Structure formats: C-alpha cells, structure tokens
Image (tube, rainbow, N blue to C red):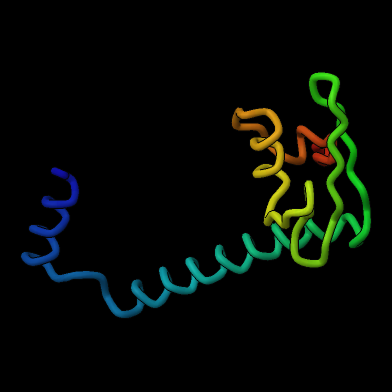
Length: 106
C-alpha cells in the first residue's frame, strides 16, 4: 500500500507518465498478450482433433480426446488438460505433465 501511495504523491507533484511513455507501455502490454495467445495456440496445435490421450492413475485408465476447442473427458468438454488432471487426481497437476505431453526443454 505504501509504494502505491508514494507513487501517487509523486505523480501529483511531478506529473504522471508522458504520453510517449504511456503509449510505449500499452504497446508492450499488447505484444505480451499476443505472445501469450500464440503460445497457448502453439501448445494445443501439437495434437490434431480426435487424438486420444490415455493415462493410468491409481489403477484406473483415463482417456481424453482432443477437440477443436479443447478436450473431452467422460463426456464433458474442458478448456485445458490441467483441469482434467486436477479432476482425476484431486491435486494441482500440470495437465501436459500428467498426460506426458509436456515438451522437453531444448
């Protein structure tokens, strides 16, 4: 809270960000959003719709089907593998790690 208040006091005393700096920050934020969306799309595209991911967990076989807009598990659609992994294990798992689809670091 103190840093926010001190910034606000300085902003009132010396003026806020210049229009140029404000514009540059907005450009950076937009590029980060674009990169993040591209990363998500790139991860999902490594499997074609119809691909089945199978994992055995505590003696039970779990099957996930890749869809155009996410994944299907037990007749329900999900946006991410992580949600499915959490549903199966009741703990916070990374979906790609749980299903063995995580890419290895170069």
